[in-house]
Image (cartoon, rainbow, N blue to C red; front, side, top):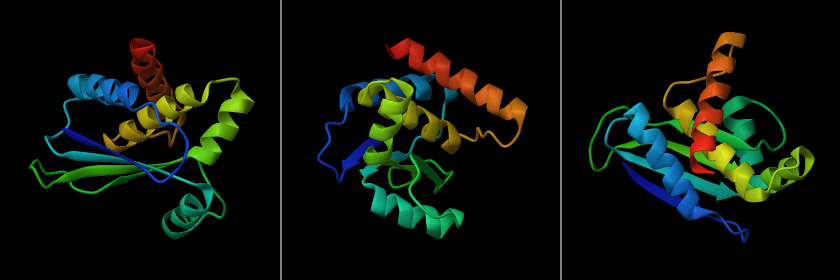
Length: 139
């Protein structure tokens, strides 16, 4: 998998840790060989995406989009959009560092692209367990 980290923000993004995290998840979950884009943006941009694709107003922390299930050099498995503004606010509220919150959101977004969700209690528990497992391994 080819990981592309794109930042449209002035905040420092923990790129090396993100690469390690995605590689770890990739090794265990075995997604198709393709591209994954993680894009860091500000609240106004993610609010537009949230309104357009989820019909919800206001910013959110992370949005994931599955794009192409097929393998290949040009295939894009998915895109993860993360608001660094909301991530910073949430990190402060939860007592996490900004870097830890960014890693949590990358993990959460990638798991969504791989088919995990939290639509019901059992699925939510499985997804949280997976998140904790992967995040503990890279700390």
